[in-house]
Amino acid sequence: MTPEEKLLLSIIEDKARQCRENSMITNSFFLDMHEKSLVSAFVKRQTDIGIIFYGGFADAERCVALMLPEYIEARNEEDIFGYFAENPADDPIAVIEIEKDRFSPPLSHRDYLGSLMGLGIKREMTGDIIVGDSGCKLAVISKIAPFIAENLSKAGRSSLKAKIIPPAEAREGSKAVGVPDSFTVSSMRLDSVVKNAFGVSRGDACTAIESGSVFVNDTECQKPDKKISAGDKIVFRRKGRIIVSDCSAVSKKGRVIVEIIRFI
Image (cartoon, rainbow, N blue to C red):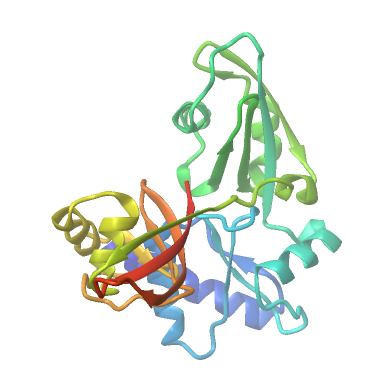
């Protein structure tokens, strides 16, 4: 484990302690998928720590680890969305809507992220960036949201207008729409499913898995031979994600027919 990873887990322990002792909501900074996996594995070994990963948007990739006092009866993402809708002052995440001028060319995720870095905003303070034709929605740690809304005005040559929007409006339309797809595999090994689902070679699939770029049910998996089942979510970093909806049928040639929902 690297010094940075040890520091992260120490922060999680400290936040959990503050939550228990002060009966208050505590949270980490935004975690990427590797950090989420690391924290999730750590929490499973600590019976006194309970967390919900929360990113401001439905199915967010970058999330904070949220620790809740006992009086808040939220057990999943939908519960916590409902709680923060009724108690917005407690929400550690704010969402900023950024509108670009209509005369400039389309801007990418990298363009918006670069403009934030130009303001001195660290990546750990920002979550998912959902890019559209006219701008984007951006999740940030709430305490820096007013600064960004007031000062973010340029991305390259494009003029920007930024404003903080209500949580319900932020989540509207943020849930990704999946597309059904299917393929066949000789076995439900992770490397075989990744190869066919993401259109890479078997060797590249194994390399990606062993290097920590593939996540099964939000947990980093470095075992190419892991058995995949219906209901499993697989994320291939920078390639997309799928959910295996069914794998019970077999083709005439004896191969498993894998039905998936694909998200880009």
